[in-house]
Image 1 (cartoon, rainbow, N blue to C red):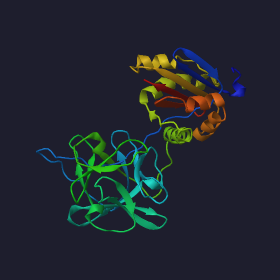
Image 2: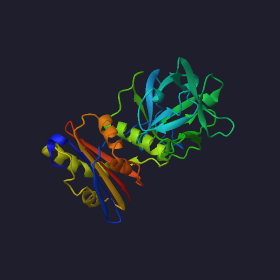
Image 3: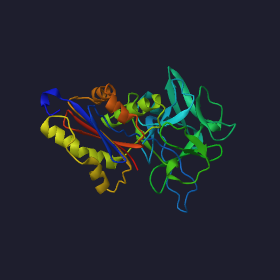
Image 4: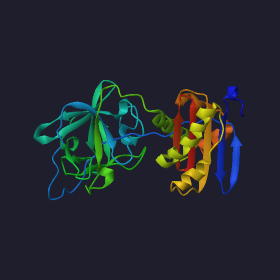
Length: 307
């Protein structure tokens, strides 16, 4: 394990005092964003957001997950932790300060619609049917933008990664505040952390496991070991990563770590981990959060935890 030329990967897990050491590969957390609407404006209402005809990504302000279509046809609107064509919207001017939120699906323009049956569900449909497909924008005093449905002034509300976005009474909550991020028709490739979290949660879903969240404290703890591997040019566990996390205020209940020195892309590291039963066990284990650190060109360390 200490032979640098072997470039092996390692994994460490701890739960109730147990320690597991084995071979593995690692990749890490992601981040994305989207933009919803807020509620009941204060006495001095913030200025309305100018609506220009442009391509945007709508990102939730709290956890930075992007609004996306749930499938190729775009029937439901969900929050996802990465950017691709399903998270690109066209913000188009309408009359009376209203806008349309549309997306191109296989050459067909689809529009975001509030379901008139339950006034809660949002979906994409093919055609323009009325004001339940038109929205207004308003800046929130606390930062971010509210997306109001123009028909009854309800707000888009985000419920978490891979969860359906709904239209609910505007209450000014963080889940109703979004950022509008300008972009082009070709979104940039996701960052390694984003790509890792995307693939990790897709993998966990295959095993019937709940998705994990990206946690910056765990990523900070993972940086020590990633840095040591980068200096030594070999895989291993050289830092007390869970102790570092505790020192940063993270109350660790269960812990797992996968480390890998060698691969130069997040996909290569991820694929290597999946091929190792010990690392796979950590990746689909009973954890709720993860933090990935990537140091240099070939050093990867991911810390998993539950608190």
